[in-house]
Length: 168
Image 1 (cartoon, rainbow, N blue to C red):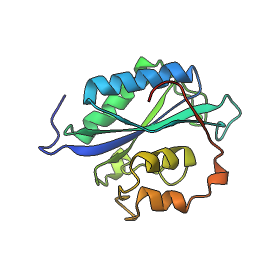
Image 2: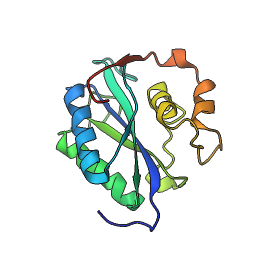
Image 3: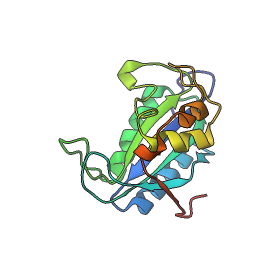
Image 4: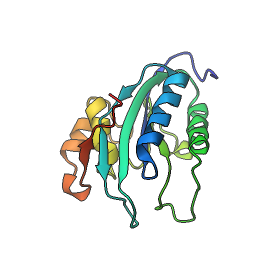
């Protein structure tokens, strides 16, 4: 694992799937644990597809500590997409075997890497699980805690149901 800096930082990634979602969320957890060690797992949530008609998604957020460079971690998430045989459609709102996005890499702000990720305060299925496992982490741009962002979020805009797929 390439060393990006001398200090490990907290990294949070969102993981979602609506094609064989239980299998693909397990795949992501297993691969990330092999690469980065101990993981913090949010509960898994079922929510309707957003932006298209399709099967429900299962979504979760995973946290870990890493001293790897952020570019390495982003590239590793793309490797996970390939391992799950994700087929990229022209329309970004489409069914997928696996969708893994780096949400936060410490307090790094880097537009090219989409850090922090714009989905954090846009979708409840990202923000809710992130607030559950990292309520006191500050958003590196607006300075609010994840819990404060969640408290202000319109939860009705993204209906979610917690489901148990045996990860925790």
